[in-house]
Amino acid sequence: MRYTDFDQRLVALDALPIHRGRIMRVWLQGQALDHGTRRRQSEHFLPLALRNAVPALTAELDGLARVRAEHTGNDGSRLLVELADGQMVESVLLPRDGLCVSTQVGCAVGCRFCMTGKSGLIRQITSMEILAQVVLARRLRAVKKVVFMGMGEPAHNLDNVLEAINLLGTEGNIGHKNLVFSTVGDRRVFDALPQQRVKPALALSLHTTKADLRAQLLPRAPKMTPEELVELGEAYARDTGYPIQYQWTLLKDVNDGDDELDAVVHLLKGKYGVLNLIPFNSLEGDDYQRPDLERIREIVRYLHSRGVLTKVRNSAGQDVEAGCGQLRARAVESTHVIQVKRRS
Image (cartoon, rainbow, N blue to C red; front, side, top):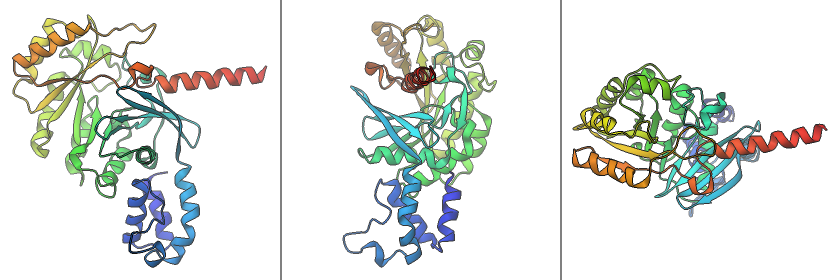
């Protein structure tokens, strides 16, 4: 269900825009739809038809998603979220009241180092399912920042993601620069974002300065060179005043060499942004490994000394083997095993 479909339900109940806005506001805060205030009960401002429909509307919204499991780690809690049709996605409670949400079940980009990409794209997530992840998180704790960096490529589900961003930046009471749209790079994103009422911050998945290596690591990403991606990011930074976050998954002996570091300096020095180094979340049997801790420190020192603002961002959930896509993969495998046993 998209928000526009839900809003039409409210319109059919003769709910005025002010009432429809209130319904979304209280839901996005994780509160009951008929939640009143200290001075006014809901019956004093919600029309009768809408009050009578609250139980059915609540059931419909609660049915969008539920927390199937929570895995608490040192760097945040990862939630395995089950959608109404039984498909599962992941969202992460990050430090400092942040939340990472998923935008697709699976992903079509097929990044070689990503568990989610190995499943391919299963289906799109609707705008209301994206918002439901925020609601579930807010029922557990405060959420003041939402990053669209979970399962899926937001650019491939653009309408639903932009609809969710607009609602979070208005009815959801989240600052626009605290909404972060992450993408491997798609020209449709750079065309659409400047036209939005709510303009989110932008995170660009760079991962290398070499066009041929990027095509190898991100086999189904749009054919765009790192230079083109940075140029488009800089234009958006000038338009919004927000620094660009450049994402770089560190892969041992792949993109952590001195030649890459020199190229990073040439590419990003003087740019309005920050380079987020994400050491690879090593999985048993994977073809890639994360660099040693000392090498990571060397990289940060080198880039800082040459004027590139660099931060290390570990993938949340590594200490509980819950890196992006791992929880879903294990849950799907477990369900499959159970089904096979029942058939026998």
